[in-house]
Length: 318
Image 1 (tube, rainbow, N blue to C red):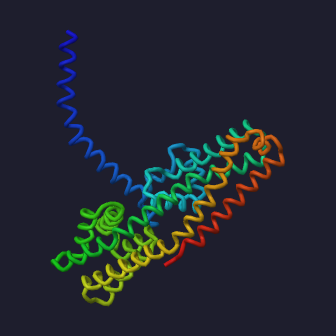
Image 2: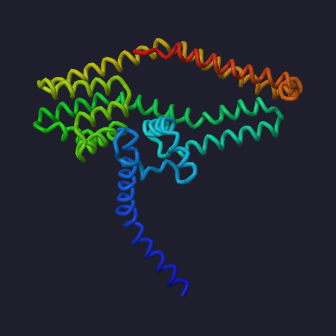
Image 3: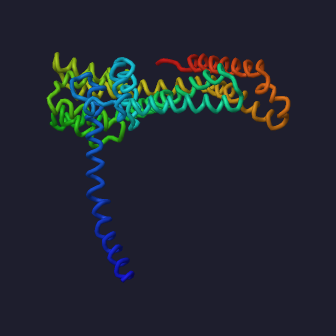
C-alpha cells in the first residue's frame, strides 16, 4: 500500500510538475508583471489610473496615514518605481521604522546614550531609501548603456516600413531590461488610450536622464514639423553614444578622486577594528566614557560630511 502511494505521488509529480513549470508559472509571471505595471501607472504618469485600488500598504492604518501625506508618499513611490524593486511605499516605511528602532535599542543596550541612539537610529532609517536611490542609479546607468541600441532598432524598423508604435513594441520585445520595461510601458500607455505625446512625457518623467529627454524632444518635434524620423533617430543614437564615450572618459579622469574617497572612507573604520583587536582597553574609552562616545559620534558625522563633499567633487556632470 505504501509503495502504491509513493508511486502515485511520483506519477502525480511527473505530470503536474512540468505543467506548473511550463504553463502555470509563466502565466503567473506575466500576470504579476501586468499587475506591477498597472500599480505604478498613477505614480509614473500622474494620471487617474488607481494604484492597486489606491492602497500603498496592506496595513489599513499605515495606508491611511500614507494617503494623507501625499507629496512625500508620491516621491517615495516614484523612487521605488524608478529603482525597479518590487516593494511598495508601506514596506519601505515599515523597514525604515524597524531598522531605526532595532539600531537604537541595540545601541542603548550596549552603551546607554540617548543622543547616540537617536543619531544612529536616524541613519539606519535612511538605509532603505539610500538603497533605493542606489538601485535607481544603477538602473539609469544600465538604461543609458542600452538606449543607443534601442534608438537604432527603432530607426531600422522605421526604414523597413513599420509604424512608430510598432517600433516601440519591437524595442520592448527585443532589448533587455530596463529599456524593455520602460518601452513596454510606453507602448501600453499609448495603446490603451493615452495620447502619444502624453505617453512620451510620462516616459521622460520616469527616466529623468538627458538622453531620454533628447529622445522625447526629437519625437515630439518631428510630430509637429515632420521630416525623416529614421534619420533623426540615427543622429540621436550617435549623439547618445558620443555622450556615453565622454562619460567614460570623465570616469577615467576622476578615478583618482574616487579611489581617494574610498581610501579615506574605509581607513577610519578598518583602523578602529584593528585597534580594538590590538588594544581593546585603550579603545574601550570610546564606549565607556561619555566624552569618548561624543567624540566617536562627532568623528562619524565629520566622516560622513567629508565623504559627501568628496562625492560631490568627483561626480562631474557631463
